[in-house]
Length: 503
Image (cartoon, rainbow, N blue to C red):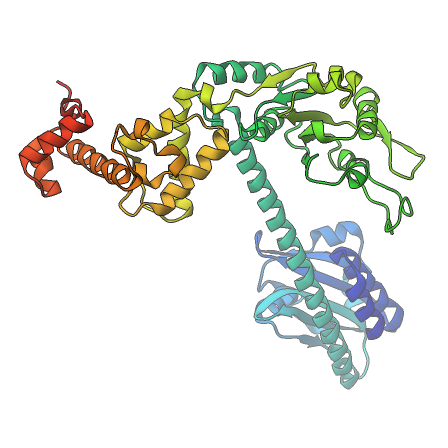
C-alpha cells in the first residue's frame, strides 16, 4: 500500500486526485475501515475543510468545516500531534459536525488522526476509524498513517511550489505585457513635427482594421516601433506579436522559419516545427525588410495574405491561420517590381495602406525632444548624472543631417552620456562628424585649435547661463578677467543678453 501511494504521489499532477487515490488505497488495503477523512487547512479563510473522504455522503462532507483547535481534527492540526481514541463512544471531544457518526455506530469503533505537517506548518489532518482491535495494533496503524501524511505533505509542497511558480509567471507575463502596451502606445512615440502628426493620424485609422500595412522609410527611422504601436493599439493586443527580419536569415531557411516544416522535409529536419505564421495565430506578424525575400517565398506569402492558409514545408495538409501582416522595408519596392525582383501582385496586396516614416532630417523640431529622451534613458541605464545638453552641442545636433536617423541620434547620445563627467553633454562629447567649424561657430584652422576653441566657447556660454548673462560673475567663475571674456564673447559671436532673465 505504501509503495503504491508513493508512486501515485510522485506521478500525480492534481492534488485532489492524489487525495482521492490515497483514500481509495487505504480502503482497499486496511480491513475494518468505516470512514476516512482527509482534511486541509486554508490559510486565507482560516478554516479546515474535508477535501476527500470515504464513508460519508457529499452533504455530510460539506458540513465538516472546522476552526483550528476545534474538535479532534482542529486540535490535531493546531498542535501538530497525532491522536488515538481506542473507543470513540467514550470520547467527549468528538464533535461529529458532519452528522455521519450515529450514536449507536460509534460503539465498537476506534479513531486515529495524524497531522499533515510541512516544516513547522500544519497543512491538514488524516483520520480513520475502524472496528476496535488490540491497542498495540492501533499504534502500528498510526505509524502507517503518519508515513502517508508525510507523503501527502511532500506532494502538497510540490503542488504549492508549482502553483506559486505559475502565479509568478502569470504576474510576470501580465507585467511585461502591460509594459509593452505602455511602451508602444502611440502617445509614447516621440514626435511633434508636422510629418509625425500626419503619421499618427494615418495610424489611428488602421488600429482596429485587419488590413495589411506596409511601413516605408529609411533605416533607423523606427519602423519596428510603428509596427509595435499598431499591434498594441489594436484588438489583437492580447495575442502574440511575432517579428522576423527577412534579411537576417539565409534564403534556404526563411521558408521553414515562416511556414514551418514536417519531419523529414529536408536533411536535419528530425521533428515537426511550427512556423511563425502558426505562432502568430490570432495576433500580428511583422516582417522587417520584406524586400529581401526570394520570389518563391513571396508567392507563398501572397497565398497566406489572400486565403489565410498555407502548407508546411514537406507537408500536404492545409493550415488555416488568422494573422495580421505588417511589413516594412527601406527599399523602393516599386522599382524592384519594374526590375522583376519583387512580385507585382504581392506589391499590390501589401500596398493597400502604406505608412511613410519621415527621416530625422525632415523632423527638425523632434531632434531635441528625442535627444532629451535618450539623455534621460541612458543616464538611468549607465547610472550617470547627466542633466542637460549644452548650447553648442544643441547647435551641432540641429545642424547635422543624420543619415542614420533616430538610431544614429540614440547612439550619439549614449556615447556622450558615457563620456560626460560634469552632468552636461558638451559639443566635444559628440563624434567628430558632428564637430565642424560651422556647427561650433569657430573658424580657426587646424584640428587642435578648432577643438580648443570649441571647448572655450562652450565653457563661456555655460558660465553666462549660470550667472544669467552677468559677464563679471562669469569671468570670475572661469578665472579670467572681464576684458578677456568681453573679447572672447565678441570673437565667438555670443550675445550675453540672451541669458538675462526675461522682464
